[in-house]
Length: 501
Ligand code: CP3
Image (cartoon, rainbow, N blue to C red; front, side, top):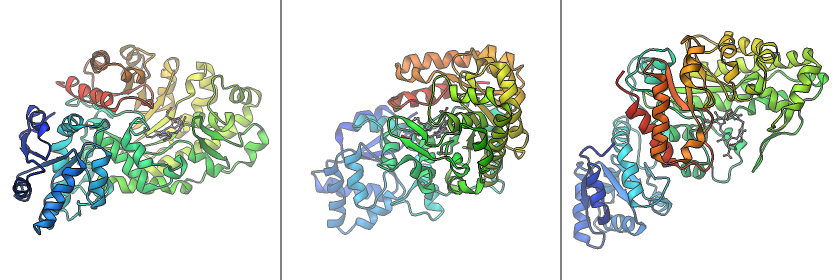
């Protein structure tokens, strides 16, 4: 993880050593010395500089001001289009953007050191991406991630099909253990909070330009092996007649929860076309996604959607849901059948739009006994899995489902999700190595030190024992407040340690 001999230019002399320490060749000019700044612009224009690091708004003004004064603003802009530009924080980014120029990387923390080290990790990738874009005629002076166009071979599926993530889904050997993270985009990231700004979450979910950008942002920043579409499981309930709102500080609320058999009869079957914003986002993400990174689509599983629809909000004991289920099994199965058909149609539309894998989130199934899971859930989840279009791997996720793993396998899925409450080695043995597995770090460990994170990740890799078919992940989503650099430390640790198969 270094600059690998790239020339790294900055007007901040204090970064010289940090750049060199990470394998870059520093090119530094004093912003107060116009002649040096001229020479600096010459250097950028000569095409031998690959990275530009901006740490002070005054430096940016000096650079742009000098270029304008000497009639070379176009020369500078032309150079910048091909260079990976990093900004130390929002103040620099704003100045740069006000000149309609884009920053390619801004660290979550602020300051020169965070910029140098964060950019060191991504520089090679970002330079390659930008040059590929320019070769393909994309204007990169002011652009979004969704503007990117990768060159694809004649068979675009060929390269992705061989990606570590898809190979692991098929239980084929991989060079390293692939990793992606549940909720890899979210409030823990400043980049996410800035993109979201003060938008309502539901409005945001329905704006494909934004969800596509967030999907790409998270995969790029973390360097994970798969992207997951930025969306949520609950908007699918809206076309069935449920009034959904995300209440700040409380989470999702259904204002008209389902509590009677008559209400089940009156329910609309969810029309998959209603989720057009999801398919549009998929189509926007695909051409901009690096050729070796697959895109995961997803849906809530029928049971987890039913839990929200009946409870109306998050709950500890699921008493409305279970009361409904036990008191009126007929109505329960009718409701679950409607949900299953809706979920199946929704996932099939996502597959049609081009996702490379689908994950079914049964986040709350862990509240059930094995007998109840078998009687009330398995037939419906089974219906979904057996009616999905063939050809893409299916991941089956649950939390607290340690006692249900065999039943989840029976319901379906090529990959079974494990949370941290189970021992990965034992769980996989119980599954008879007949599926791939995904997991299973406790997300709270990401608050501990990077050393501890590394140790815990090593323990999980040890349990997987190099057996083909392990996808590293958390047992549940990244929590708000998690330091982004700890998340990155995990990704890098897994990539470094999980190799040599
Ligand atoms: O993983 C990703 O990066 C993709 C995005 C994603 C979201 N929700 C975004 C989101 C995914 C895969 C989901 C799935 C989801 N949504 C599940 C299943 C996975 C799980 O966590 O068990 C569930 C149960 C939901 C329902 C839901 N949506 C809840 C309980 C909440 C509130 C909790 C919270 O973190 O605030 C949401 C809102 C939500 N979904 C947010 C995000 C980023 C937070 C919105 C915000 O305030 O910015």
